[in-house]
Image (tube, one colour):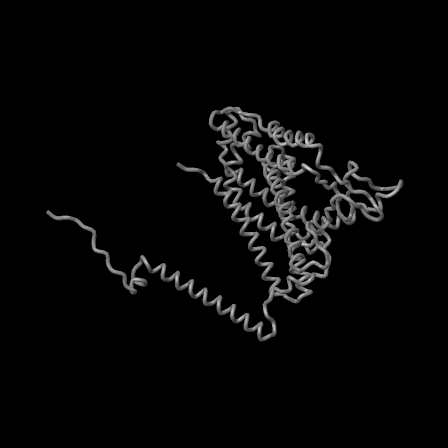
Length: 404
């Protein structure tokens, strides 16, 4: 009687790193990594040596020196005596602001245009096609300049709002559209305003929770709950009740014409508006094509089956088509968000003080620290791009089909 036993494992030898297929690929990868590290170390050491020979040493001490220049739009306290680091922070916040606004607006515009491009209405379909073809085939820099030029040339100046012979007036008595920007009411935060804001944020979470529950109930039991009016009630009623119960703690500071300009309220500068709108309509045209491709990737049998069950076209799009199309839409959508963030560096063309204009423009020219400023710019854009990719990839993974 014979027994079968596992063969004795061969002891490890250095020659196996090349001769054994189990280790050969790891060996080549380790060698490639070592060569890459040595190459980067050589280049870095060569750069530092050449800079030292030219009397240039990499130093970031300039960030603590006074900036010496003003910035036309800031969201945090800043003056000309603030440090270069503070000026860079203002630029970072301005960049994040316009990127966030443009991403939201471009998404809404792109989804709307993409859905309407597939409309049965010939006129609507052709209008959306015209929008997509016109805006995505002209460089975004040209759109930025066009919108900024229209704002400064067409909109009235503050002096046109003055006197009985004024040729312009405020919209609803609260909004002033001028060639210097748009002036809107500013909130005044009183005692208890934090509670109202917290309730409003909780109401937004409640809307998402309700819609998720209604969708799950529909999928599980076929019971259809109303979406629109309950969502509006959850969003607004708790906040309105808290607002009046706490004695209206949030007020408004309205802009008023004083002297040669408006005072009070919030000024949204013309450069910000031009950059925001241009990035939105330009990138929205690309997102519209992504949405159209995603919708067309869903089989028509899905739409026909949903319609046969008695669902209205709007319900079919929201509950059947778009959830499946998102798996096709999201990956290219990530690239569009990255393009918005990087294209915001064109803000310098209209004088908007983003990070490229502050750190990569004025600060670089005043201090002469080109290498340090460029390295910081690269680090900022790299960090923002990787963060957007990471967040969107998490969402993309959540939309994948869950197989058993």
